[in-house]
Image (cartoon, rainbow, N blue to C red; front, side, top):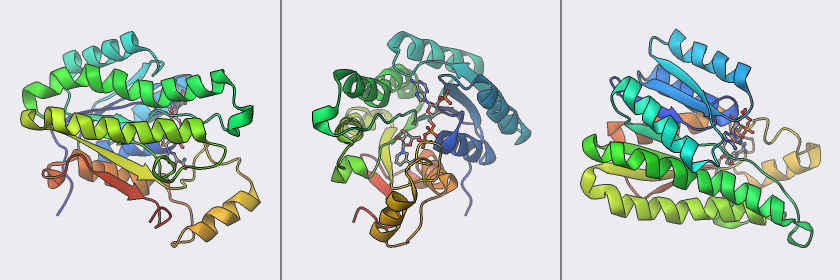
Length: 248
Ligand code: NDP
C-alpha cells in the first residue's frame, strides 16, 4: 500500500530547511503540489521549490513571516487561487529562544508564543474556510516537550502544548466538514535547530531515548504524509509522537 496525494495541494510553513523541507519533499514525492513559506532563507526556499518540481509536481515558495495574520491570509489566498483549492496544511514553522524562567525576557516569551502558536492560529484560520468546501487535513508540528515540559524551555513547551489543545478543538469544530486536525510531536530531530546542543546534551538525549539516536527529518515527514493522506481518514484530534520512545 502506497501513500498517494495525487491531485492534492499542500502548504507547509517554514519549508526552507530542516523538518519542513523534508515534509515538503515527501509530500511532493507522494504526488501533491507543494507550496512552502519561509522567513529569511530565500535561496534555500527557492532550492526546495526546485526539488519539489523535480518530483514532477508544482512548487511555490513564498516569503511570509508566520507571525503575520494578514500575510497568512494572503499566502493561503495565493495558493488556493493558483491551484484551485487547498487540501493539506502543515503548520511547521517554529523557533526556540531557550532560557530558565527567572532569566527569560518578555521578548523571548512573546517571540516564541507568537511564532510557534500564533502562526498555527493564523494559517489554520485562513485555510479552514477553503478546506470546509472540499475537506482537508491539517497537521501541526508540536514537540514531545509540549507533552512533558523541559527545563529552560517554558516558552517553547507552552507554545507546543498550546498547539495540542488548539488542534483538538479544531478537530471537533471541523469534523462535520470532513476537515481533520492532528498533531505530530517529534522528539529530538537532527536539524539546524538542534545542531548546537553539544556532545553532553546529545548523550543525555540518547540515554533518554529507547531507540538511542536522534530522528532524521524524513522519519517525521513520513508520519505527516500518512496523516495528510486518506489512509488516515478515521484519525482526527490525535497526537502522534515520533520520538524513538522518549516521551512514553
Ligand atoms: P529549523 O530551525 O531547522 O527550521 C525552521 C523553519 O521555520 C525554517 O524554514 C524557517 O525559515 C522557518 N521559520 C522560522 N521562523 C519563521 C517565521 N517567523 N516565519 C516563517 N517561517 C519561519 O527547525 P526544525 O526543522 O528543527 O523545526 C521545525 C519544526 O519542528 C518547529 O516547529 C520545531 O519546533 C519542531 N520540532 C523540532 C524538533 C527538533 O529536534 N529539531 C523537535 C520537535 C519539534 P527560514 O529558513 O527562512 O529561517
